[in-house]
Length: 162
Image (cartoon, rainbow, N blue to C red; front, side, top):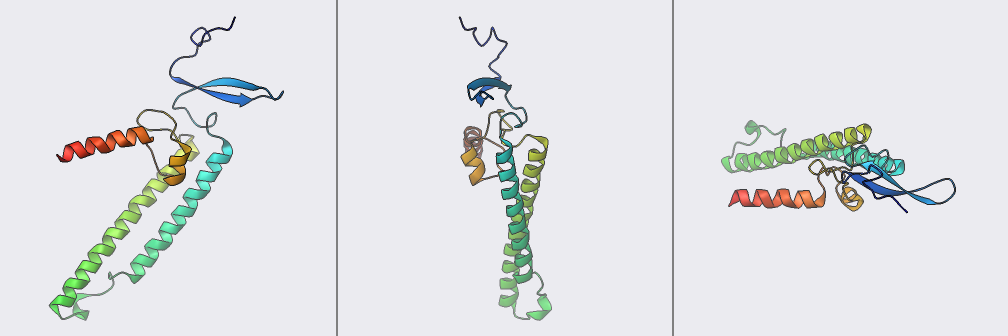
């Protein structure tokens, strides 16, 4: 007779995964929820996400450099004596600064995600401790919340607006 999960010392705070053993059989292993992915996320997945994040980081840095070079940041008000031209330049400058600020925030999120990979915490929801779906991580590798917690957060924010 097979023992129950509780008789084997397995609690509701653990996640069961099928693992192949040397003899080719599939064995169910139980790991604590919210623990490092070393046991949960495969090494190849962590390497994949690390490469994707580094590639995204490089793109953001290149975009930021291009935005700063092309943007209206370098133009001074003395170069544009007309009031309408100065107003247009200020609007362009503000837009460019907003873009650069968004890119700065994204870089911070990328660096935090890379740190979570190094610490073995990548792919685990910060709110509930469940695994974040791989599809979500592929779409948004800087995600820190599973889709359920993110939806709850957005609903809460929407209600705060009302």
